Length: 278
View 1 (cartoon, rainbow, N blue to C red):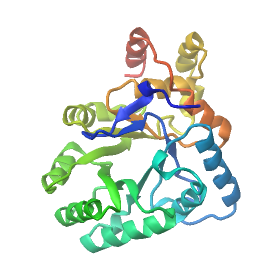
View 2 (cartoon, rainbow, N blue to C red):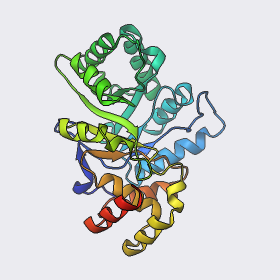
View 3 (tube, rainbow, N blue to C red):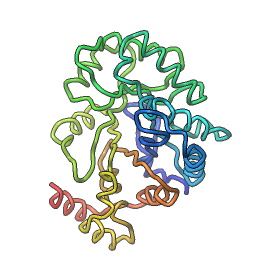
C-alpha cells in the first residue's frame, strides 16, 4: 500500500514528513543479547514490510546488543534509502561526548548506511554530562552522519534541559510509551510537545497485544470494518504530532497495522473512547 498524504506528519519543526505508523524492532534479533536463530525470518519480514508500504523503521543499539540494527541494515539493501526513515538510539552507558560519536558511527556500520535519519538518546540518565551529549549530537548533524536528533523517555523538565544546550538545531521528537490504555503523557509531555512542535513517537501502542483483544475497541471497529488493534492505532494517530511504531511478528500484523491508516475515527467515537479509557 502507498501512504496517503493525510497519514504523513510533520517531523518536529522541520519541513520533513514522516509516516504516522512505522515498524518497531524491539525483540527482533534478541532482547539484550543477540539471537541469530531467526535471522532469515526477520530479514524477510522487514523486507516484506517495506514492500507492502512500511517506510519508517525504529531500532536501537540496545536491541539485541546491536543485532537488530544489523538485521535492519541487511534488510534495507536494494531499497531506495531516501524513501526510508531510519531511527536508532544511543545506549545510556554511551552518554558522553566521545562515546556518543563512537556509538553513532558503530550504529551506522551495523545499519550499513551513510546517515541516520533520527538519532535519539534512549533514556535520560541522572548525572550524565547532558551538555556534552547534546554538543556531540549537534556535531553528528553538522558532519552529515545524522539528519535529526531527539530524545526518548524524557520528561518535560529533561526535554527543556536538553534543548537549552543546543546551539543551532533542536530536538524534533520524544519517543515515549503511549497508548489508549496508558495516557500518562497527556498530563504534560504531550501538551508540551504539541505546543513546541516536537513529534511524539509512541511505543508499545498495543500494550503487547492486549488491546488487540479489547471488546470496546472491537465494537467500535465493527462500524469501520476494522480490527480492535487498528482502532487503537487510529486513535493514537488522530492526535496532533503523534506517530507510532508498533512491532509486528508477521507480515499479516504489518498489514493490519498499516491498515490503521487511510481513514479516521469520527470525533464522536474518539470522545467516546477518551471517556472509556480515561
